[in-house]
Length: 227
Image 1 (cartoon, rainbow, N blue to C red):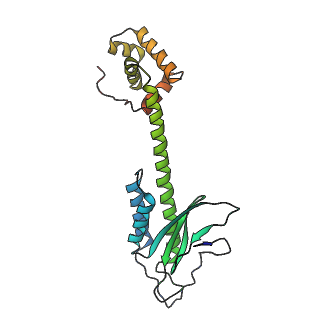
Image 2 (tube, helix red, strand yellow):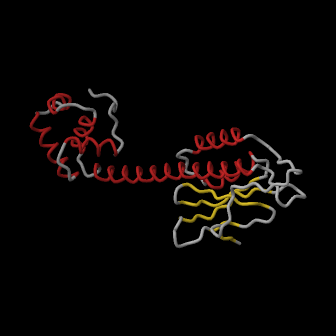
Image 3 (cartoon, rainbow, N blue to C red):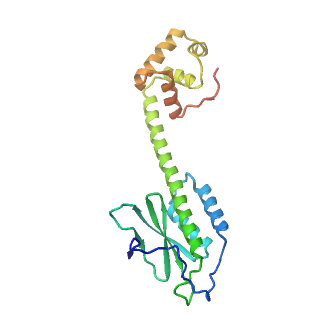
């Protein structure tokens, strides 16, 4: 069940009964420390980040807060929806125009308007969860793009002959045409012929472009013995 959060409902005012003290399981700094450590641990990891973060939030809040995911992009024409959970109050987990879901925090037993974690901490924790998901998701996207770039580069390099690959490897290491000829014990003209064919096969026009493709394919600047 989802409810609309755009119909005047705000989460910035604490209507708690002063007779019911908020249960403070940890300070905000402790929560933030855990979120940062989590981000470092899973940065670039190929895992179910949402499930892992949900488990982390449940653990660090002693089961007082749960993460519920329902991705939505902010739109001026669509209402923002949030999961409605019995005996819990929701706080949007959002970063930028992406809503990842909600942080659902339990009420104190016997009180219908007092949360087990202060509203200020809930809002900040929800915001930090949004930041964490944004950072980890963007890094994963970047890695996938890099993997695709490497795959494309490797496919291009695979069209080169063994001799041309050797020349390209020396080019990646920063050697001049003359030095490459000396290392391979061939004439400078032979190396230049290989280079022209490398440019043709890779569909490029400069040594810089060739070096970039070589690097993307996994060739190393210090790639072993140059002798």
